[in-house]
Image (cartoon, rainbow, N blue to C red; front, side, top):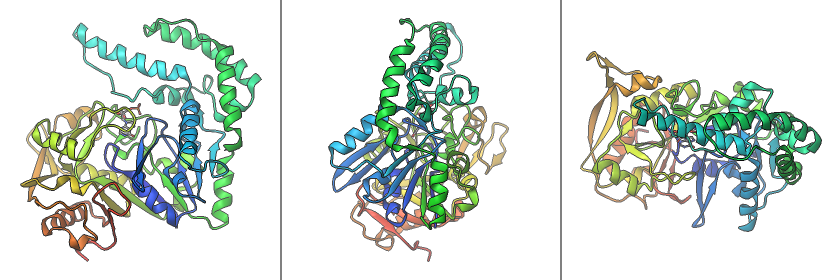
Length: 439
Ligand code: IMP
């Protein structure tokens, strides 16, 4: 059985924990999109690991972890991550493979990302709109843009050939220096010799891991290995299907799996959609159920809603079921995992968004993936009674307070998919797997 794990909201749903749990029943864990903008935090035996590029399956010995061709790899961060894991006794060797076709995030991509955001935000003081996206400034957009430009892109395989790298960087650096200057970056010209040397050195360090992962994955499939596809970011940040333009630059929905790995979609047997019991978002963009008040603050504090990658406080609000149902449809979710349910203990009542009121007064139960359209809707809520009890020690779903069970049952009914997993805390043992209350 091959499984795809995907976030159904705007990221940070707790995919890392689920991937870590599911890894036991799979042989290979594969990343297919995104880059070091993603942050998975996984707690194993009380130790918190923050992973950005390496699949969290790396924490389980004996599993092969693959960074697919759809990922954009920042070699500096990757080497840092490998060293950090090794320093804590985690084995990283032949259990990590990186696609030779994955694109490289270079330092000028990160500079470009930050400079563009700065320029866009600064237009506000000139009376213009703020068009900045609120990116993680990890160079993701510029690296994917280069992939599409083709002529100025660098792939992982090229880091293994110093001469070739230098030849290309001589041209690229001249262009990038001019572009950065146009964006107001006042620095010395990019030095192709220095960059080629540093990045070829990363290539040497990473060479044992760099390979044709497409053939590798198909060989493993033929041998009967079970694959687990680990989505980064989340469906509502998908470049085609998310709240454009407030999205990331890859196909982070399940639709990104085939292109980002070379494995056809029909090989995915099960799609587990990961959702929080509420909604959160980092960066700019519409968020109809956002609570900029006591409710939002309480969720943020209880849920420790601060970015794994940037440390930014996350925006928090009620669960938007219209959004979750849309994502479940796009991703073909066969089941759901409802994370962070424990964060909602102690509210008198809980609101679930079950529709949107449009500016003309009409109602829709469809999600609006266009950011401007979504920014204009009013959420229509259903109110459910909350529960007072802390639930972090619950051992199975039937042990949850009746009101928590009713909350989960309403999610299942609205989204039209069963909740296979409920999470009530960061530890592996705080995970309730199996039959829903309605069974
Ligand atoms: P970028 O991916 O750095 O270009 O950022 C684009 C948007 O996606 C910003 O709003 C980011 O905050 C958001 N984003 C990117 N990756 C993640 C993630 O893993 N979790 C949550 N938000 C993310």
